[in-house]
Image 1 (tube, chains in turn yellow, blue):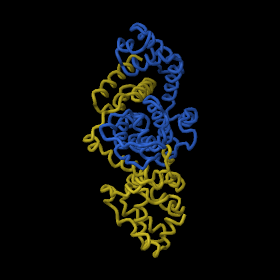
Image 2 (tube, rainbow over the protein chains, first blue to last red):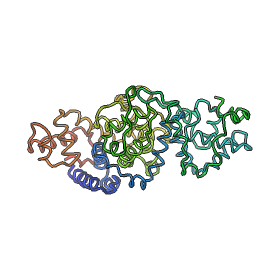
Image 3 (cartoon, rainbow over the protein chains, first blue to last red):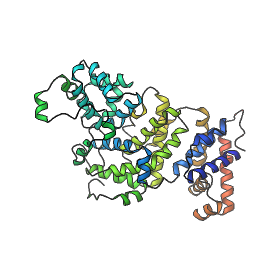
Image 4 (spheres, chains in turn orange, green):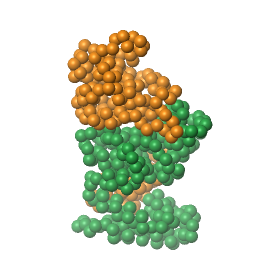
Length: 213
Length: 211
C-alpha cells in the first residue's frame, strides 16, 4: 500500500494547490488492485475535501453558467427537469434547435407548422409548458429524435417535489423562468406564443398535441 | 423553513454559507418564490469540479459531463433534509455512486433522465443496494473492504483514519484534533486500518498492494 499512500499524498497536495488534479493522471501510474485502491482513497478524500471559495469571475469563465440557469429553470418551472435535460440532449444529439423542431414537426405530421411547434418546444425547454398536457405522441417523436424513450422523457417532466412548506407551481418566481437566455435562444425560431385570447381562437392540432394531455 | 418568514440573503452571505445551509436556503427560497439563481450558481461552482473528478474515475471520458450534470441536477432538485456539511457530503456521495451505477446499468438512457427513487430518498440501504453495480469487479472489492474497515472503527478512530490517511494531515495535528489520542496512537490506528483493509480484500493473484 506504500505506493498507493505516496500517490494519494501527491494527489492531495496537487488538489490543495489548486491544480487540475485529474485523478486519472494518478490512476494511470498504477494497475490492478492498486489502481482500484487508489481510486477509492482519492474518492474518500474528495468526499470531504473543502469546496473552492465562491469566485464570480471564475464561475463566469468556467462555462457552468448555462447549467446553473437550466437547473434554476427546472426549480421554478412546471415541467420537472426538462429545462435542464432537453438542451443537453439536443446538444448530445448534435442537433440545432431549428433542425430538431423541423424534424419534430415532420414526425408529428405538421411540417407546415414549424413555428408553432417551435414555440411549444421553447416552452418545454423553459419549463413553461405543463408536462402533463404534452401528448405521448409528442414525446415518442421527440424521444426518437433524441435517442431516448418517451417514458424516460415523461418521467423527467414530472413536476419536482415542492420545497419544504411551499407549493412551487404558481409561485411568483415562476415568471422569472421566462427570462430570455441568449445562449439557448441562438437557434430559437420563434417567440413564445402570442396572447392567450388569440391562442384560444386558433386552437388546432398542434395545440392539442402539446396541451391536450 | 418554508412555513416561516423568509429573508433573502446577499451574495456575500450566500458565499460564506456551508453547503448544507446553502441547500436549505435554496429549498426555502424556492418554497417562497424567492430568487434562487445565485444560490444555484454558487452550489454548482463549488460542487462541480470535485464531482467531475469523482465521476471521471468511474466512467468513460465521453460520459463525464453527462453523469456529472446528472449528479448536480439530482443534488439541487431533490430535498436534502440533513443538518450538517458531513451529512450533505455523505448524501452527495450517495448520489454520485447512484448516477455512476445508472450510467453503467442503462447505457442507452441518458443518466439525466433517470429518476432518483421517489420514496426513501436518503435511505442508504435502498440506494446503496441499487448503486452497487459491478462496473469493475476489483473496484467493488476494494470499496467494500474500505467501507467495512471504516465501519469497524469507533468514531474517534474513524476520525483519525480520515484525517491522517485520507486527508494527509500531520500526525501531531490529528492528535490535537481527536480527544485522547497521541501521535504514536495515530500511527498505530492508521497501520491497523491498513492491515485490516488488506485482510478484508479477497486474495488476488497479483496482490502486492496491501503490505
